[in-house]
Image (cartoon, rainbow, N blue to C red; front, side, top):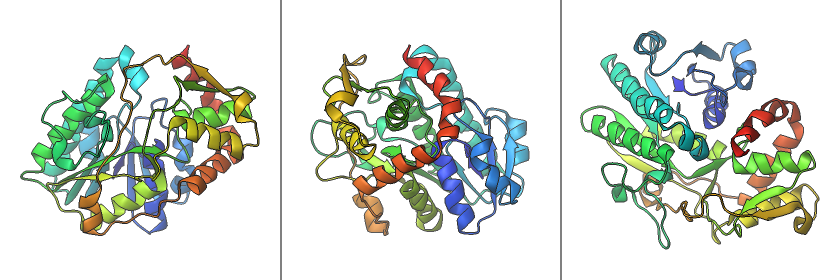
Length: 326
């Protein structure tokens, strides 16, 4: 089962696993960020059993888990800006929903449960890299309602993992196909295609570790097969040199054939104290044997090409996505 499988990373994972011949159930509430149309080719070819349901609904979860031997739990509210105006929703979905999923899946004897966390549970780091053991119990390191809810959910999963087959994955900033256009990269790409500039916060020097979503999908299959339960694992691209938001915006301009001096608009940072740099140590998962193919420029290029070819997909989502910035 893939919870949140009609969302961004969940969709990438569903296509990866369907391509490998796995039988899949997707449970998704289909909020603004989830689209059943993402999965239509898989549903129509019977490669995915799709269930429209809420992870907070115990009865729905119990029913959906029938015949499931492993769960990969993506379902979550996931945008920092949205969490500022509705923190209770984030707590309900991200914490209580995760509790329901863990309790029901493990009661029914699921053989492996992978909870998708985030690098934001560690907070920002000026120099160096966070290792798995640097996550403190509680949400004191997190800096938004979103990351605090994910930190609490992470703790829940790790607590269950002491006695049950649970793994926690903490990935860095994912990008790629099917990402809702409220997020930086698809927002910037779609803006330029529509004739608008890239709104770059501050000086654009914030550092994010840009992890290509199809690689996250590969990582999750690897952990289903070889991950050791009771453990948390970081996964990251660890670019060298690191990629600033400005560099990412300049690449997009180059790939879309526009002048970066004209198409990047620097605006005052609405969250000047927000985390400036995220960075994770990946020694643990590397030693286990996972070594992804990191090629940031060409992975950015593939992402840009996907949005160019799939205008119909993001155009019907663009207005709602932009509403949170107004």
